[in-house]
Image (cartoon, rainbow, N blue to C red; front, side):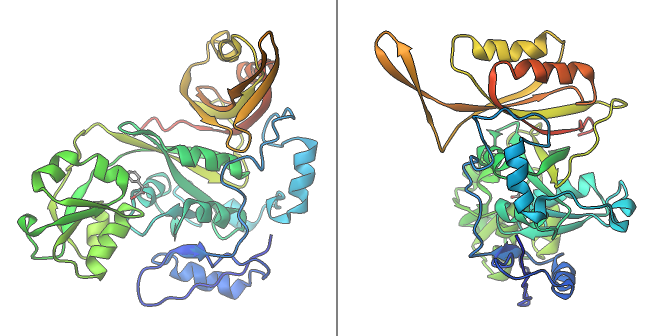
Length: 390
Ligand SMILES: O=C(O)C(=O)Cc1ccccc1
């Protein structure tokens, strides 16, 4: 799919949105350069672009078995129709990507100062970050070569999995190339001169509000959802709201010129958020450092299939770090014939598993070959280094 990037700077902070990812145009070098120049403070907007459905089923062909990152023949044929997903030759930019992230553009959902941006900077301190209105836009930005990678929060030790982002992993053909674990510190902030007692409401991302209930109920304020924590800070600042505070990062306070009224206001100080970094191409799995592999699969019907599926890892002494199941939205029910009482209908699920092994290890390869005996669909989402230094 081709696109045209249109980004206007109207004086304020902007995000990449659907409107900027155009249907029929092409990406002119000039417009890309212009967009990238503003991207430190701008977000892309997208409208009118036909997005793949977010229920994750367009790329899921459950009737076919699929191994590795290459996909089935049918899927490869489908992908080859869309030239943006074809592997591209190495360029000078690829070769100059350094581990500190200079020359790497990372798309994230949110405004500058969001925690997702902080996680991107933890992984690649010198990267260029591209704020996007929605997660779909961040994925699209990578698929359309506007960004090299996308980052998305996937789970939190306090509130668990971010289900929508699991679903998104399946809608797109991006590969997980890294994980980042971040301990998130929330700050309460307001316009300079505003005191805590003057606050009548506090704005933030729902996840942040949920984790700061102690302070919020002490303040007796109403809570208002924002798209992301930094957007909350931006609203308070740009609208000059003197009765409102925001919960966001210390970086957001400094970006939007707000004063921090209280630091580390979260109820639980040990809470961590795990983010995934996605790219168009998988990385080459290695065995010289701890690796994790993420897979998604569906199972045949029958007694004990989940037990059998999990045993392929236990038999090879492979540790599982995460199990998640999600309904198959497009075909949520599986009709099973053959019971004595007639036809039964079951909920049909996708299983996501993370295991501690690299796809370069024979035990991981044989575990997945074994798993194929019980699964109707299997996709490796990525094999990537574990973030062991949170
Ligand atoms: O809103 C943000 O800043 C985000 O990046 C999403 C988020 C919110 C709370 C914890 C971790 C990530």
